[in-house]
Image (cartoon, rainbow, N blue to C red; front, side):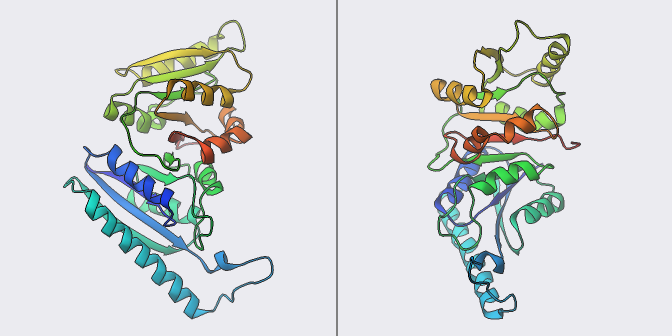
Length: 283
């Protein structure tokens, strides 16, 4: 069965880098790639000027630019991806990014969303950056892999997974992480902050549950003495030149608070390594 991967683009360099990263990451895997561009007349609104919603000429221009941009991407990909395992389809929609992603994930049964963390500063359709964090928060039915600017795929030496052992783990929400770890044969480094002398009974149970999710994989536990988990994860990953950071973003839990701190925006928009946001489909 082919893996289905959805990649939104605003035609910026980082957006194309995200496509290239995904293609290289899944080089050996049969994949259907869906490349999405969304556009809207409201993107042309400024503080002083509102473009009339009924401007048909402008709408036609937006649609034409979107379709031409997607055709250009297909041409670029034809020169770099010669794998018979991969197929590419383009999607051009007048929509907002979040609604478009939600709809396509359901319609196409998407396995993973891959997107850049920086958009074109002067893009007139979709500008990434803060949208990357928003996608990670709002798209609850699909994992999201965010690719920083100028990231070229290299063998992933390890994947950092921060946790407080304060939430339930499910195989379903871990599937994307496990699949990538198996694909690239990378160990998972589980990072935990030392706040108390030892894990309590509930935390110990969650730890054992996590171990069952990672059964058959290489993994190790690392305790860090730091008051800020986000800062600890960043320092840990940078010091070890880790290839990816992954975490579970559940609603109404420890991770919701984690994800909304300023450092998470750093992870979402300014990370130096790819960040994989996992979700509990039932949350």
